[in-house]
Each structure stands twice: as C-alpha cells, then as structure tokens.
Length: 539
Image 1: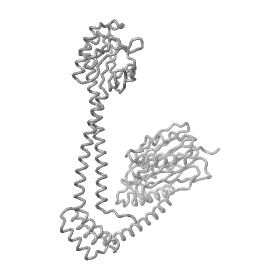
Image 2: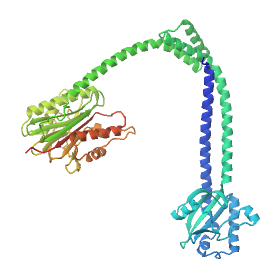
Image 3: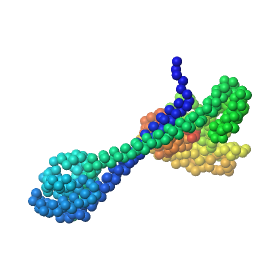
Image 4: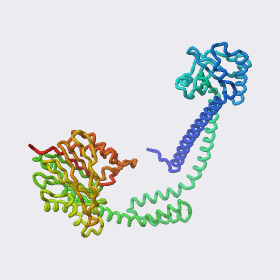
C-alpha cells in the first residue's frame, strides 16, 4: 500500500527543495560574478602595472642599445631590477618585465626579483633565454595585440598580460606582468567559502520560517480542499455543514486564507450561473462557427479556383492563391476572357477583415464582372471599368468601406497590357531574361469613397516568357514572431529566383516563403497571390 504523505510534509519538502536550489543558484551566480569581477580586477591591475613600467625605466634607451649579452652591464641591470622589485612588492604582483626577441629567442631585457629570489641571490640575469615561452606571448608578438592568459614556466604558474611595444626608433619589445595563480586561487577559494556560508545561513532561516507558516495555514487549507472536493462531487451544491465551516474560516482569518474562504463561498453561488451562461455561449459560438464555415464556402465559390482556367488557351498561363486571415476575408481576384483576343484579370483588397469585408468583396466582384462583360468593346479601357464600379460602390456605402484594386486587360495577340489602378500595390514583372522590375502604376483613389473620382490607364508591353506577379499587402506585411515584416524587398527577391518556373510554381514558392517567414505567427491580413505568364500568340 502506497504510503500517504501529508500536505504539510509536501509543502515543507517543496519549500526545502526550492530554497536549496534557489540558494545554490544564487550562490553560484554571485560567486561567478565575483569571480569575473576579481579576474577583471586582476587584468586591470596587470594592465596598469604594464603601462607603469615605461614611466619607471628608460625603456627606449634600454631596448635600443641591446645588441647582445653585454649590452647592459650587471650593475645597470641590478639597478633596473631593484626599481621593478620595489614596485612589484608594493602593488603585490609576482613579476614585471620586458623581453626582446634575439636570434628567434625571447630574452630578458629588464625584470624584477621576488623577495625570496633576492634573499637567495637567484635574480634572473640580463639576456637570459626564455625556455618555455607561453603561447600568449608569442601571439602578442605576432599580432601586436595585448594578450591575457594563464600559463606555467620555469618560474611558476601565473595569470599574465603581454603588451607589445616599440621604442621611438622602432625597436620591438614585450612588456609582461604576472600574478601568481596560487594567489588568485586563494582569493577565489575565500569567496567561495564566504558565499557557501551565507547560503547555509539563509537556508536555515528560511526553513524555520517555512515550518512555522506551514503549520499555521495547513489546517484551514485542508478544509478548503475538502470543500472543493465536495463541490466537484455534488454538482456544485454546498452542504450546510461545509458552509458553516467556511464561514468560520472566513471570520477567523483576516488574511488571504479568510479571503479565499469568502471567495469559495461566492464562487459556489456563481458557478451554476456561469455554467448556464457557458452552455448558452458555447451553443451560440457553435452556431456562429457553422455560419462562418458556410460563409467561407460561399465566398470561395465566387473565386475561380480551377487551374489552368482555360486549358484550350496556350497564349498564357495563370495561377492564383487566396488565404483569408479569418474564416472569411476581403481579398479578391478574378479573370475572364472578354473575347478571343483579350483577357481581363484583377486583384483587390477590401479594407478590414471578416464578414463586412467579405460582403463588400462579393459586391465588388459582382460589379467588376457585370461591368466588364456588359461594357466591353475591342477598345475597352480598365479606367472606365474602375470608374463605373466606383460609382456603384459609393451608393449606400454607409459603412464607408473601400477596396484597393488593380485591373488589367491583356491583348493575347500582341502582349500589350492595358491597366488602371485604384490605390493598390504595384505588381512585379519577371522578364524572360530573369530580370525583375516593379511595374509603375497610374495614380488612382481607392474604390467606394468618392463617386467623382477619376482613373487613368497605362500600357506595358509583355514579351513571350515575361511574367507578372500581383499580391495584396497580406504578403508584404506578413509578420514573423519577432514582429518583422516580410517586406516588398523580400517579395521581389523571392520572385527574382523563379526564372523558368510556371505561374503555379511561382505563386506556391512565394506562399512557402511567406509561411516560413511567419513561422507559425497568426496572419495579420488576408493573403492573395496571382501570377501570369504571357507565352505569345499561336502561329
């Protein structure tokens, strides 16, 4: 039989665990920061010592005259050694010295001696060859940059700095300064012991506090737990006995425990009401979701989704994708053959999202289709189509919705593209040679705002193999989890590597690129892509 553990024991054990872990983590971080601060302090001390050396010795004169082992007399070397020894003893570092490179070997130019070396007469002589040259010194010499490092040699183990220098006449030398690693380790060990002691004291105090708090509050919490269990098993109906117990706790405790008991009493009275409201809300939500699914189906039925749309026509290739940000949206596109030689296609974006935008989208598509089919002549102008659609949209537009739209008519024989714009984004042209360019659109006000707005048309020559890619701002304004936009630059960059691909492949490649950029972030707007390739008239 599994042994039951009381809540007081669990809470206490949890408090112990959290306290120990948090104290250990805090101690580790504090020690790490102090370690880092101490090492940085040592580095600063070594740096200051290295830069102080030229102010204590005539370094230019010393290093410029070194030509061999007899360039500095023993007396002169002892003089420099004494000066540096006094300084290193004062600032408590192990060694301060300079080295020159002579016949591919580093040799002592100036140095100090430790008190022990001075006492035993073991001072390092001038021009002594450095036997175990540390890598950091070699790197400082080669790269002419300051190097820090830990190393061991015939004099001991040190934390050091190496500073490459030159005399005024150009003679190179190295200034080095050392602190004994034994000294560094001792200081760090003291810091570790200090933080460990502080942590243990903190743990002891916290455990005493936890024990007293646990015993004081466990009893009423146990009763509250029993009340919760009874609520779950009695359809949220509270017995009179439990109500009296909760009332007693509420009156006896004026802190959070009493507030919790009072909240439980209020909760029981409201739960039934909340459940009833939830049932009604859930039913209403399900109805709305069902209606939105139907609305999505109806909206999608407005769009041409069969590709290729005209299998018997080989003068062009066309493909489009529309992804609403919600169940329904305001983006739109359409295309149709006006006659044997002219293809009309357009793309648009209704301001806003959701049901209002979807309704306005349906009205716009209906007006575009009816206007194009009814008013079409061999010299039809997209600007005239936009003007008539705009007048119709402005009628009874009490919600002040509007739509941006670009309309094109392609002459399938000549490749001449006639187009007009109502505030929409410019498309990208991918030439047969692989170059890309933004198509310059005529200026035009969005549709649905001003019935007196006028529109103009422009022409653009497409050659066989040229492609035109249209989009709504749901593409360029697609947001990543880091809140960066997909951008127009990335849009045209994606298109620029699609040379030789079909309209369907280009549209799907852009969609994949946008999806990868979004990386799971919710769409900020409806997204539509339309690609068309002009292949030329049949012979």
